Amino acid sequence: SAVISQKPSRDICQRGTSLTIQCQVDSQVTMMFWYRQQPGQSLTLIATANQGSEATYESGFVIDKFPISRPNLTFSTLTVSNMSPEDSSIYLCSVSLAGATGEQYFGPGTRLTVT
Amino acid sequence: GENVEQHPSTLSVQEGDSAVIKCTYSDSASNYFPWYKQELGKGPQLIIDIRSNVGEKKDQRIAVTLNKTAKHFSLHITETQPEDSAVYFCAVNTGFQKLVFGTGTRLLVSP
Image 1 (tube, rainbow over the protein chains, first blue to last red):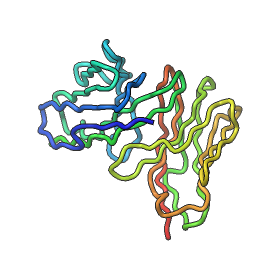
Image 2 (cartoon, each protein chain N blue to C red):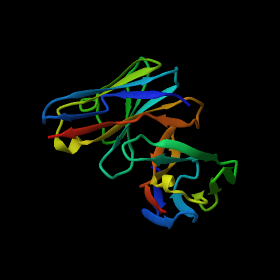
Image 3 (cartoon, chains in turn green, brown):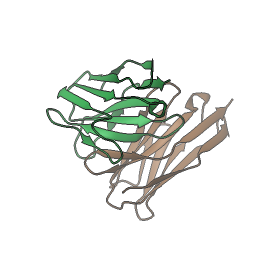
Image 4 (cartoon, each protein chain N blue to C red):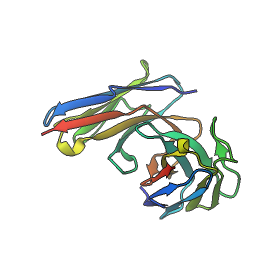
């Protein structure tokens, strides 16, 4: 497995502002992903963070709202832009170590509340 | 796209009983089926997984069974303990290493 950390662990933000969430892994990984988990709900994939290139977004998520960076094999950031109360969620990064059907390991999550 | 249904949404058992959670999926090409446990305030933890070339896998008190023909797989927890109380998610792979998650099952184990 891998040790994954996220910063911040939680935050309360005002409507219209932006928050950048960091994800750090203790070893080089092949794939990094960002998920959203709305209160009491399941996990929904936002995008795949590609090292050195633009992220691949899932249907319903756009780069202008959720810009993602992955400058190297152990670090990624997700920004939640122009926030509204509907963005209040837990944001999770995950990593995959193996091949095409590799296991995914999750970070502890960032709990975001937008007021 | 892939559709994953998970049942039940909540499950209450007495300590020592067994618990079974079932998931069904739609894409016959899926070949990796993990289960995650999420405790309050934490990220999901991978507890067991199974691949399509295997029908059953066990790890101490937990086991997963897969029926590819019927497109369903189940998590079995025996001799449940209060610390098993959590939300459990099944998932199915789709596309290149992507996972689609079930809706979750809240398991409550009463002493």
